[in-house]
Amino acid sequence: MVAIPFPSSSAPGYRQQESGGRLVNLFAEPLGEGRQDVKRVRVPGLTQFASSGQAGFRGMIEISGILYVAWANQLYRCTSAGGVMSLVDTLGGTGSVYFARNNALTPDQMVVTESGAFTFTTGAVTAYTPLGLPIPNSVFMLDGYFFFTTLNGEVYATGLNDTTLDPQSVTRTVAKPDQLVRGVPLDGKALFFGTQSLEVWSDVGAQPFPLQRAVVLPVGLIGPDAVAGWEDGWGSGLLFVANDGTVRAMSGYTPSKVSPPDLDRLIQRDPNPAKLMASVHMVDGHPMWTITGSSYSWVYDLSVGRWHERESYLTNRWRGMQTINAFGKWLVGDRGRAPTFVGGNVYQIDPANFTEAGDPIVCRLESAPVEKFPQRVRVGRADFHIEVGMGIATGIVPTQTKPVASISWSDDGGVNWSTPLLRELGQQATYKNISIFRVGMSTRHGRRWRIEIADPVYLAIFGGDQAAELRAAG
Image (tube, rainbow, N blue to C red; front, side, top):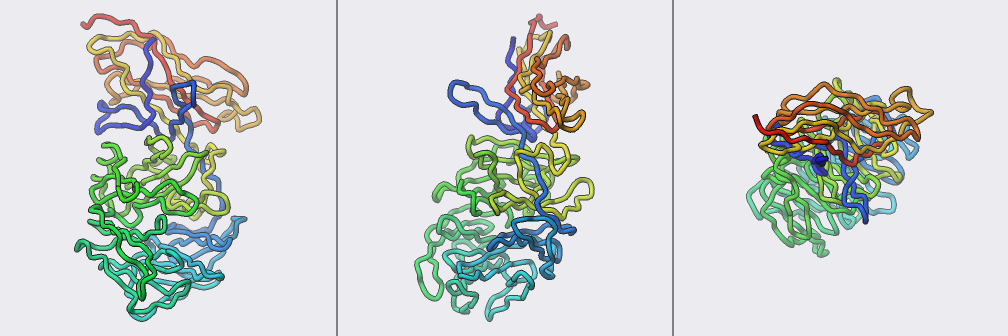
């Protein structure tokens, strides 16, 4: 028997024949002391939390038990009960918005759009136009102060737990002559991302502007939404896509590269890198950082340092957008369902749901080549170690009562794949081997295997073996 080299981190390669294997809608989890292998489990599904009837998700925040969500041209709200959202007011624009609140007993609530800054309540949105403040491009709160950033490098600060703004309470990020893209808070510091630099500032209680620059790092941010990890409820570190197209993880003041070459290539060749969107969520103790581009979504599991790919039904990227932790849940805005991409919903990221709001989550595991180069290999059988007996007797017929796996193989490095063979995973508490027999002769490229499972049941794939008979090359 020859072990099939299934990966624990996705490596699709620039071309199929370069692939080291892929995990699509699966992530690897170590099995613990006593076992050296891993299981590959399904990514969490999406369960509807709230609906608006609108399209064009732009951002959201939870304040004092109220969830506020911006859709195209409008602001909606709901309580922890979710359900149908209520209209708050018009909120002009279609681009991403940035929310913040301060620490006042009755919090002041702020939002920045491409049209300017606004305050809002449960019933109204009001333009915020203090003397001296130009149109900002982001806002955040640190230590009770609102900080507004502008493209030309200016940062404005309000009073403590107030919305008053002294025209003198302003500074500039001047380490490099670049544009200021975004400001976010992290561990009691203010991070100001430029296109070519990152400046870290500390609150020193100065007047009229409370911050003082602490350090400058020679790395910028590729786009305003390409940073995540500062959100409440996360606590696992900040990651961002740098101006060089690599994903960096902040460790103290060191932005260390964590992205593999395959992802670097996708980012650097993305036709619209300024629109990259990062988000975070937790899955059963796994901190997941996601980056979504024009035609891909990749997820970094910080607990094991491995990457997997994520795709929603009928598309090549995840439908999820910005995430927040609210009401004891991880909530995510909806890009919409292919092919129309008309969203309007907020979903809960739910590992107990094996679908995305009813759509199948098609899990695909591809191996690296099983090679005995330059010898040819006759494959007499292959066995796949998959959790069986996971059918649900009272579930949907037949996808939950009799779930199946689709197994195919490629002998040209992944350019072409065989007609899939279906193998039952077993009805509830019915255990059986997952095997196929007499599947021909592999070539000098070695044999690659693909397992696809879409049926909505618990899924764990451990690995596989193939029986090989070596023959002389001819």
